[in-house]
Length: 344
Image (cartoon, rainbow, N blue to C red):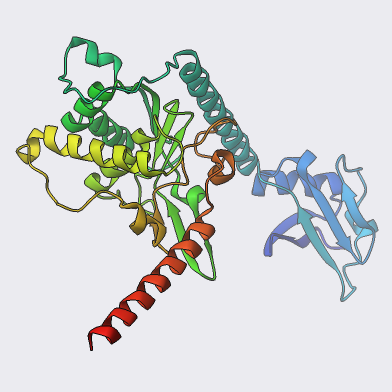
């Protein structure tokens, strides 16, 4: 009579060999599996073919040679179970997610407690003074679950301390409770017509401003001046929700003020191009869009999507704006062709 028993147990497609005594029981096999694969006995299920089928913990002290049909061509033992380390990793991830949610809820609650209604300023020149500390971004919050959040925090600090941004916020008396980064994956959409990327969002006229700092693959950061111009756009939403003429005039004014007060550029505009001309924005088919008007109401979840901004504000959807812009282009081209024909 053989003094030992050689068994193969398959787990997640990988065979594992076990050498047991001839008098080994189902409990002995379970203990050997726990010692070798670090799968606790309560987590083990053994599917033994062709019979006796599924065996679950607690395993009885049944002799293996009494239940295993070793000579059958269909004989196979399959182990179903999760290693202790994988379970610990899942628990740690759940705890990390819980802390993220608590931090988000705390940041939003703090922003709401400290919210102040921004006042529209007149056209007088405002200079930075001791009172200007009230007209700033009171909280900066990177997304801690994305790579290297400390770099995002440095980026947000640079925007907050930018001399041009500080001067414009002081002049218009803008007070923003929370400035945070946007998760690119949650604000990129696409269909057969192309890909749309939202660059910024303003919640409740300055309660929260989100900016798209990172590239789509999270492996780098977008151009600083492009992000700063997006911030000018979002600051204008502190006053106007819709993308009307008043909004675009204020956006262009803020951009000029930011450039003029930027002593790092010698107080000169770096470009003569108007910031986000509304016609250009409407024609930005399959490209990046700044936003879909200021968002009002609803619940803000950091790093999450909060629904349709167009629906919340009553403005046009992106598809409607693109269609209208295309119609206008066709009309302009038709008028140009008629002028050319008359000239010839």
